[in-house]
Image (cartoon, rainbow, N blue to C red):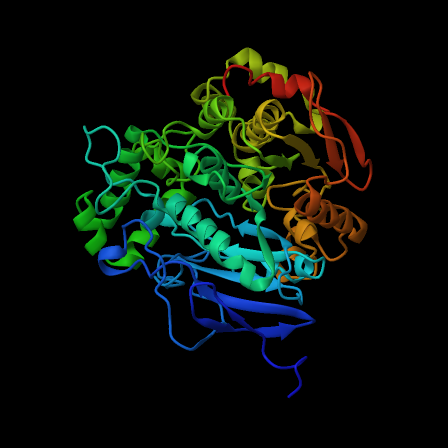
Length: 509
């Protein structure tokens, strides 16, 4: 066997070797643990660094995904994944000893209760072929990562057996692992770009506002950041709701001892049924039942507020690329037909819950084309702005003021899926960013003939940002910041096309 075909080996700085494999000229290492399996007494504990191993460890297979159910799971669906999920995967180009290549670290989304780094859509080979060391990571999801166990009536998180926001602590642990180990693949620990989408981007927004993240990254890309967090009261309601559906007390001991599939099904039911969430005391604005919680210690404030406070006090040496999709919530309202079942009362109830008055709803309606003035279309527009588009705009504004630079984008290419109704929905940009249009999930989002030139533009922009902090368009700054619009019909770099619509949220987000 020649040196060019022999399985690639790396030796980690603190001992132990890993054996990966070659795939199309790229070195690939899968399932590398950055923390011990969160099982037994470690299930709800802060992450504990992985133990070193003797000899050579096989790194050719993915670690299990965090325990979860399939997106379309029925009542008898089996559990997917397993506890030993805290691992990273590395795609790296061939590198000479002492190489210092830029690093990109991917954090998947999934509503804080599903998703996995092993999804083929997230294969990092396209980045590695561009000279980037690509890392994808997994973190605890569902009740293991985000259910808050603090007793009602007590303020803040005391740590102990179940610190708050364990999934966020996992992200910090993984980034610390990258800083200490990525040089083994030729990666430069001082040139780390983190990027994520949806819950992954929201989790990163939380991390960016935490002092513990300083020094772990140089750049951040946030795609459709889902930054809504729970108060302690909302977190308590979520814990009681899960426990009630499982049929146990809402305590750490009871939920920890409950059958894991039963707990997963409880979370899945709450995520799928808005009426059930309301029945158990979760407000209309809580689209998913589990989220990071503002506990006072791990998260001292909601992400946008924490970023403003932290960055104003200590302006970061950080470059930010942030954006969203034009029609985010169509992913959730179109495929199941919910768009056509929404009533005027339901749409107005959501607007009231998030602080928008009737006048703002009427103003929004005036900005939409006549075909989009139904209650379902209006709710979709309201939720798209509240959950993703306005938070992205706010983060860009904060970064342009306090960080080293900020670049903004909007993905507006309308997917033809679902008889042309899916549009520029949540997640449709992912196969373009990764250059993985051919994957099953990519085809489900884009259809069989996606525009390859658009994929090349986005992918190259993300790589260029990781390499030198410049995605190919000017930074976002000033009273009318410019936005790079990704769309085949009208690729443009101009002020945001909907200033009136987004201004409706001034003072609310």
